[in-house]
Amino acid sequence: MGGLTGDAPLAPDGAPAVEDDAADLTDDTPYALPWRVGTVVERRRETPTALTLVLDVPGWRGALAGQHVDVRLTAEDGYSTQRSYSLASSGTMGLPTGMPDDDRIALTVQVVDDGEVSPYLTEDVVVGDQLELRGPVGHWFVWHPTDPHPVQLVAGGSGLVPLMSMVRTRARARSVAPFRLLVSARTPTDAIYDDELAAAGPGVDVTRVWTRRAPVGWDGPVGRVDAARLEAACFPPDERAHVFVCGPTPFVETVADLLVDLGHDPDRIKTERFGPTGP
Amino acid sequence: MALISRGFRGKREADPRLPPGQYLERGFPVLSAGPTPRADLSTWTFSIGGADGPRATWSWAELTALPADDVVKDIHCVTKWTKLDTSWRGVSLDRLLDAVVVADDEQYALAHCDGGYTTNVPLADLRGGQAWIAYEYDGAPLPPEHGGPARLLVPHLYFWKSAKWVRRIDLLTDDEWGFWEKLGYHQYGDPWKEQRYWGD
Image (cartoon, rainbow over all chains, first blue to last red; front, side, top):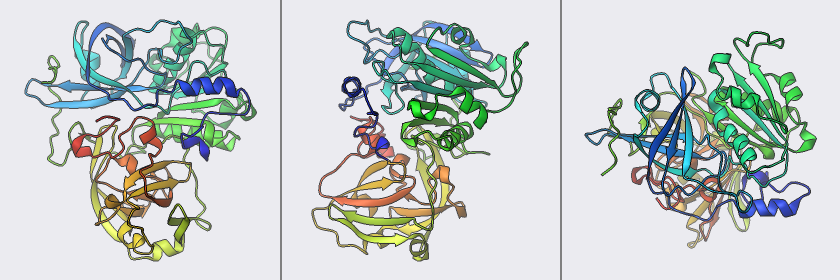
């Protein structure tokens, strides 16, 4: 399949001129990624186990929606470790001409049980602290804000973070590309960005899946996403939407397989998985 | 000197086999750019060729009938995890490359995979007991999400070079960047030099 070769992956039938514009903005000329220092300017609790850190990063080169950054922590004796986090803030690259850029980024960190970095970022970091980071990284799982085609987002748990960046970028760029988002969470307590998604406005159609417990008043099913719910919530295959699926590995494996079975072109499905296949 | 992270201590799972910037992982994370392809072993083939087309092709039965190596290797993912002592069974690229004529000026290789994935590796890195076409992991058939039925295994480079679902290796006179190499990742990917991204 040509879609993964990087030659002309996103050129669908029709609208070639706009696709070409988007292709010009892929930022695919090699560049170095130096470590930068970001200062925490805001901490925002999303759920009992997830926190958003807003950082001011002088010299930040901007990012496309869906990209991530590496964060490096260093102890006093020089021990250091790194992790990758998706950007939650809107992308600032490839925006329509004249829209302002800025040096602020947001990372949403989900605490990993027995983790080394996420407990520090969510519990110990305070406003004014500095963090080393570099990025943006990854030019595959990205949405270009001048691309007019429908976009299908499917999120499992904190896999919503890079997809929220796409939703926020759509608003920032005043894009009218039709978006649909299916977001799966265990319970309402685990749902990040809930209020913001509830107010997402026209053009962003949000479908909720609750796998363990639904909010009071919910009259739909409770349980994992299945073929019927995917079919009902997603753009049909003939709309040739760009599909972005992000979440834990078993979730992404299940959803991507079901979408292919439903007739979606594997070339148009981009995935980002985290965590192991199983115990 | 790096910026000190106030109050950070870390878990300090130091191990001399851990390259810089890596942490120990006990599970086996999955990273793929798209849906997992499903192969039909009755029509599956693996070939080595060049600009002139395939020079040798093996069916699944032929490949798995070749003498195989059982190897235990540490694997290093560019997303920072390292998994120690992973067990694989597969056919050495030394053996497979012996079956084809390689021109003196063909110093580069580009692996092609089901799903369209590609990755470039210098030919020298596929020789000398450093690379395999692996089809078993931990004593069982390699699961599809981990690259089954067969993947390239080049464990001395970051693991994106160990291309899942590999079907063909082309020998080239010029280095041609693969999928992730065009999308921001390092063209060589030595974990001990922390060659993660462009310019590292």
